[in-house]
Length: 300
Image (tube, rainbow, N blue to C red; front, side, top):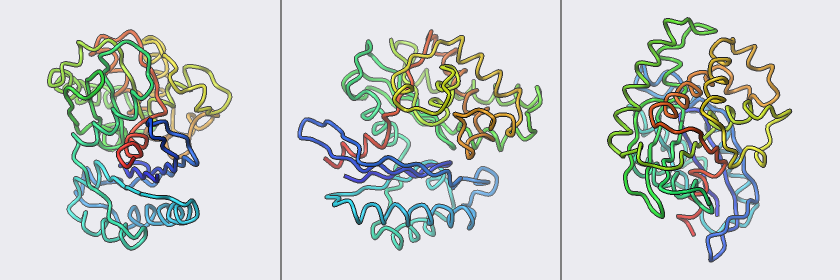
C-alpha cells in the first residue's frame, strides 16, 4: 500500500505491507518540507512556488511507488488545500504527477485517519485524546476502540507563526497574542470532544516528535526512541520556553531539528504545551504512527 499525506507544512509518503491482521511493515517512510500553505492564511491562495515545491516531491514519490509493486495508493490533502481558493490548480497538478487525484478530506476525516494510526497497538489506558498538530490545523479526537468525537480547529505551527510569531525570536507580546488565540481554540475543541475525560494524551506529527526528541536529549533524531515515549508536562513546558527564546538559526544547532521546521517549531511546541495544560494531562505520549498508517489501513 502507498499512502501520501499532504499537509500545510510537509508532504509525506508511506509504502508498507499490510497484513490481514492489520500489521504494518514499513517499506519506506519519507518526509519533505514543502510549505504548501505558505501565506495561505493571508492570501487565501496557494502560492505557485509552493505548488511547484510540492510537485517536485510528488514526482520523486511517484517514482518510488512505480518501482515498489504497490497494489493500491491513496493521497489525502488536508488543511491548506481545503482552505485555498485555487485548490483546483493543486488537484490538477497532483493528477498530472501521480496519475490520480488527491482526496481533499474534511477535518473530521483527517481526525479519524490520524486516530486509527495513532492507537494501533497502543497499550496505554483509554479513552485516548489524540491530537495531530499540523501546519494549518490541529485535530482533536477522543475514543477507545473507535472515534467517539472529533474536531479540527485552525491552529497549526505555520498558521500561528505567520499570524503572530513574526519576529525571530518572537517578542513576549507576540507569544502572548499567540497563547490567547491558541487557548481559545483549544478550549473550544476540548469542550466539543470532551477531551478532559480522556486518560491518555497522544501527540502526533513533527512538532510533537521534535519536542519529544529535545526533551529526551537525543544526539540525533531517532524515530525508534521517540515512538511512544512519554514526555512529562514539565518537560513540554521547558522545551517550549527554550524554543521560543531562540532564533531559527539557534534552533538549527540542535541535531534533532529538521531545517524546514526550525522557523515554526516554536508555535508547534506552544500549541502542544497549551493542549497539555488545558486538558489537565500530566504527560503526552509521542507517536510516530499517525495519519499515514491510518491511510494504509483504510486501503487494506
